[in-house]
Image (cartoon, rainbow, N blue to C red; front, top):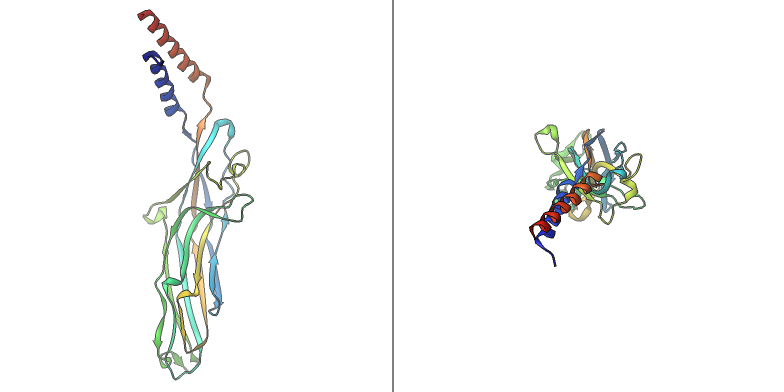
Amino acid sequence: MITKTHVSALILTAGLASHGFSALTPIQSANFSAISDGTYTNLDGNRIIASGSESLSTFAKFDPSLGTLTRVLFTAEIRMTFDIRVETDDLVDSSQLFSLSLGEAALTVLQASLGYNPTGSPFNYALAFDNGGFSSVGGEDLNPSDYTSSFGLFYDDSTSGEFGGFAFGNSDVTSGVLDATSSFFVADDFIGTGFVNGLNIGPFIQLEMTDLRLENINSAFAEVSVGLDAGTATLQYEFTPVPEPSVYALVFGFAGVVCVFARRRK
């Protein structure tokens, strides 16, 4: 049977656990440089990918003597730029209309992210990110005479843009959380001595040729490029600290006082 005296002692213990057993380490910051990548490909293919990646290798690992790591907190200043260009100079019949367009449905991924590639895993997980999109590029039912000169026919069109959370661009910094209980969390990547493993930052774009229209064209090309501005990423650990001996003494000492007081009341 739990008496009122016992309940009082238990409430005090729970209160100390909830208020004193969660802590954060100081924020660590790491700068990353500008990243860019581009690809020029024949549109006869099925997929276009452009990406960049830079390792964030200066974050110190969590010191296990502090307690038990529960979560890793991240932020990143992300601003991605992209450009998608299509062109052709090779028509089947230069007297007929032609079409060269790549619609927005072709886009499967357009993302700037802070990622984690666990040791021993081939997969990269986005921890903090911003996604973007683009409108269709190119045109339909085009007249070759509008794009012909003394140098011959050449058609070119492009679309571009930028997006992302960027601290110096009057927008919020992108943030993310990695729980230590996550199925892809590898303790050795974050706990111990030395530097954190597997963190990276970069832009990525993938286009599938599912929304491509080519009419009266022998061959066409596309150029896809992405870039990520230089910026800053941060890391902070949330953990359950090792209780100080004085905390235990306070809890049990108070419980003893309560018990003695209860006996005297009897």
